[in-house]
Length: 458
Image (tube, rainbow, N blue to C red):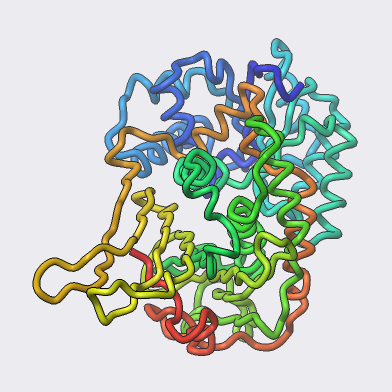
């Protein structure tokens, strides 16, 4: 089933915030690129209240807001092949309407874009109504902890086959993340230097200048560790720490990521700093005495010979000084100076930019010109945007789901290992440390990487 193309896409949660920001813009981009052969039928299921006219305005506005000036003919074609259904996804009547809309289809993809508390009820109703067999796309977070992740998986396996469950983390659809893989595995001079003998530390940063905005009530249920560390950042840890795959297949890469995470020690609460930005408790939907963290910084260690003694330093937060997503690999300093200078060269650094303008910067040492020679850092940069047009992550992932490609989705083993790693952090009950909006988080986190601190994002 997972390798067969689908003839319909069902969106549960089609009028929610995720659908507005990501799904409809992605489907519009697919319509521009692939015309109707990508999704010949879309069944959109939203909460009551909009009506068909309101739904069409919602989609048109989402495309315009997220994609800029849009092609009216393409938007019209997207809406023309969309069947809109209103109702509670846990109600049998709603699901029977979905089944009726799918009566001429054979292999739908079901996108489960409902809030986690509603997922189990929706899945049970899908099974009770006996919708056409297909694959199911589950947005992160996959569960709330290890126990709930396994329970969610069990409920899915009562309705879908194991190879038809596609667990989604949109970082795996980012072209900039795949660029990291290309740099590492397609360049032997980098691949041969990818271990503790030449790498001194790895820093992974996910920072946002914005706060929780209108997501206060949702954020109260998750926090920074569940929202970003357990999913996005640990996926990146797995990609950086993985061994070379046995072959070039997507399944071999997925297996290596899971194996790498299996060797990561659980979070040490003594090496964890939790913070909360000033004003968070005044956000709509947030408790007056909330102890939810909006910032987390931690150190991880990988029990593998390749990475013995190399710290993996992770931080994620909202209300910070900048918005950026980066993986920074610091190399061991040369350890000697050249005969014509009295200065020691600094460490080389490979920085992957995964947000906004994706790309990579390799900082190396060169000779400073003139009569005062010495080592001078030089940046060798690659900009993905300058290289040509790219697709957004959700565009890749929806196209993959429809066409039966599984390489960009998360294995259940990776989900389980990720929850195992962060479990001690979820048990911390201490109040998070306060920090000012526009700062880099609590002062207590500043020295975690060592005397020279965190690498400032570009």
